[in-house]
Length: 119
Image 1 (cartoon, helix red, strand yellow):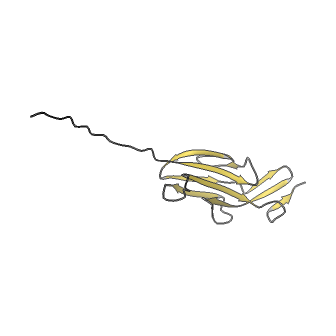
Image 2 (cartoon, one colour):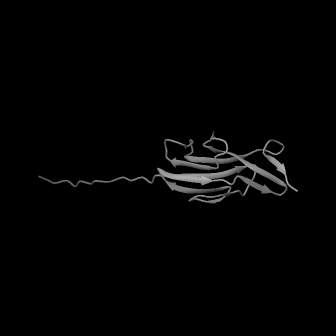
Image 3 (cartoon, helix red, strand yellow):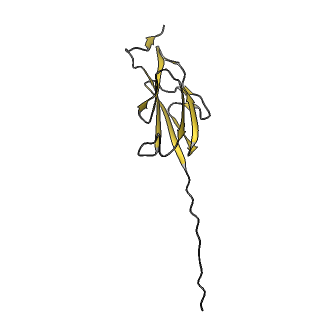
């Protein structure tokens, strides 16, 4: 009898999420948290990792003062006035078809409520 070789292969996957943080219409907004930076920026987290991001309540750029309104998570409005966003990065929640979580801390647009001219 001839013996045959047997091969066993274990397959692994890297499970991570790419987080993109941006702000509208203000730019270079400092965001704090374990993954802090200035908008627009991105970072990688492990799958199922909790992410906490905090936006400033007010940003002044040139002669315009922008007041924080809300975060958007994967294009879904989060509650108004909650400057800290906490979520778990997973494939099943908060992901769009590109595998990217889009976070946008929206501020009011000029000439609407929330924008004031500074002196």
